[in-house]
Image 1: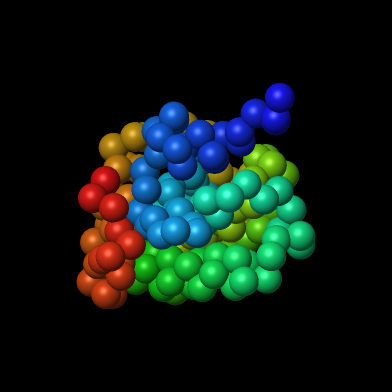
Image 2: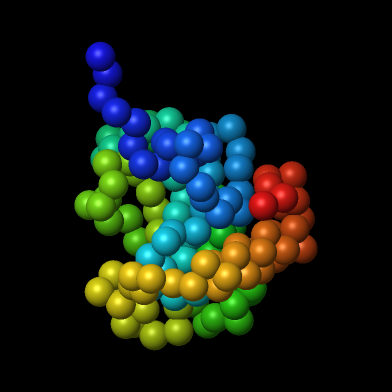
Length: 145
């Protein structure tokens, strides 16, 4: 019997809830449940890949392209001076790129992550990102909710 699917695969497959803001054939993007700032999303490959340094080059290129687009969206949607990008890979054995609006260097610390965000705040943040992506011309990749 194979290994259990990662928590991210369970979210991608709809077995666990997720606030999706992007979906294409190779990648999905959804809000994290422990944001370092409002609008913190995870760019995740549909296929389970654990270590970023072992991912196939074309898929990694696609993920970083999606992350760049999401960085532009969260920066614009939340009126932030910067967009942060972190690949940590310690908490879930499924490659994911953290993208978030950033105002200061401390925003790059997972120690500052909110352990219990208000679900309504997460819903509003997801809708802000979806709307911004649509305005940017990426509506074909934006799920309704």
